[in-house]
Amino acid sequence: MEPFRVDVADADLDDLRRRLRDTRWPAAAPRPGWDTGVPLEWLRDVCDHWATAYDWRTEGEARLNAFEQVRTTIDGVAIHFLHVRAPRDDALPIVMTHGWPGSVFEFLDVIGPLAESFHLVVPSLPGYGFSDQPSEPGWGAARTARAWTQLMASLGYDRYGAQGGDWGSMVTTVIGTIDPDHCTGIHLNMAIAGPSGDDDLTESEQRALADMKRYNDVDSGYMKLQSTRPQTLAYALTDSPAGQAAWILEKFWSWVDHDGDPRSVIPVDRLLDNVTLYWLTRTAGSSARMYQETMGAGDLGPGGAVAVPTGVTVFPGEIFRPSRRWAERRYPHLVHFTEQPRGGHFAAFEQPDLFVDDVRTFFSSLA
Image 1 (cartoon, rainbow, N blue to C red):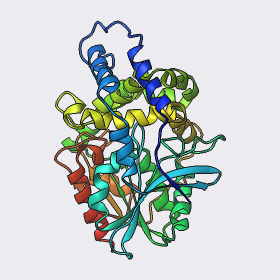
Image 2: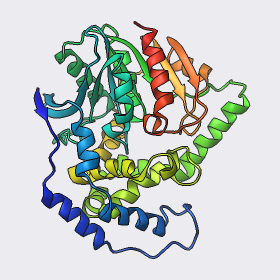
Image 3: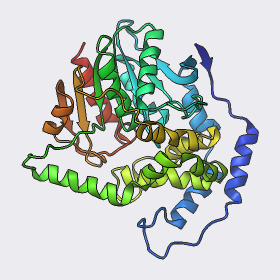
C-alpha cells in the first residue's frame, strides 16, 4: 500500500491548453441539435472554458487530494483508490465502483455524507484514472471483481458491501456471486435484467423496452467500436482534447436526466474534472478496452443467481430500467427496490442526495 497524491506536471497542463487553442474544428453538421453528435458551437464553448477558465489545480486535483488516496498492486496491476473511514471503527465498509465514461469523480459529492456511516473504498477501474493500464489482456469485469475482493481482504475487511453503476454494476454483481462469505450485500443503480418471453408487459415495462430499443438503434455505436477496435480509437482521443471531450460529453448529454444541456445538472467544471482526468492519464484506449475484455472476451463472471441481499434503485433517465419482477429473476434476494423521481445514468453525480439516501437506507438495513 503506497500513499498517493495527484501532482500533474505543469508541462502537461500547458500542453493541454495549447492543444485546445490549436484545435482544428470541423464544419458544423447540417442537422441542428444533437442528432448527428455534439453540436459544434456547444463543444467550442466548453473547450473555450476548458482552455481559459477551468483550473485543474484548484478544481480536479485539489478535490481528489482532499481525500486519502492509495495505490496497491493486485494481480500485477497497480490500483488507485480513495479510502475514507467512518468515525466508528466497526462501520460497514463499502467498495464503490464507477463505469465508463465516468471515474471516481462521480462519487466525490457523496463520500462525505456516506462516510458518516460507512468506511468507503472507491477504486479506479484498471486502465482508468490513476490506476495502471494493464499490459496484458484479460482485465474485464469479472477479473476486476476478483481484484476488488482481494483489495477488501488486504485492507482487513472480512465483511463488506459493494455498490456500482455501469461497469460498476457488472463488477458488483460478480462480487455478490463469487464472494458471499464476505460480501454482505450489493446495491446497484443500473441493474441489467429483462423480461421473460411470457411476460404481460406493463406500460412502464413497455416504455423501458422502447427506450432500450432506441439505445440499441441510435446510441450504442460507441460500445461496438470500443468492444472491437479500442486501440484505433485511442490514437484520435489521446491526441485531441476536443475529441476526448466530445467522445465523453456526448454520453453525458445522452444519459444525464436534464432539460436540454447536461451542464444544467452537472456544472461544467465538474464535467471537466472527469474529462481532464481521462486526458491527463491518456486512458482513452485503456478505458475503452474494458468493453473488449468483457464483452469480446466473455469475462462476464460465473453468471447465475446472486446469493447475497440486493438493493436496486432505478433512476428515470437510466439506460436500463428493470421492473421489480425483472430484477427479482436476476437477483432472487432482492430486498430493496426504489424508483427515483429524477436522475439518470450518473446517479451520484446528478442526484447526490437521492443516491446517498438510497445507499444509506439499504446498507443500514444489513447492519
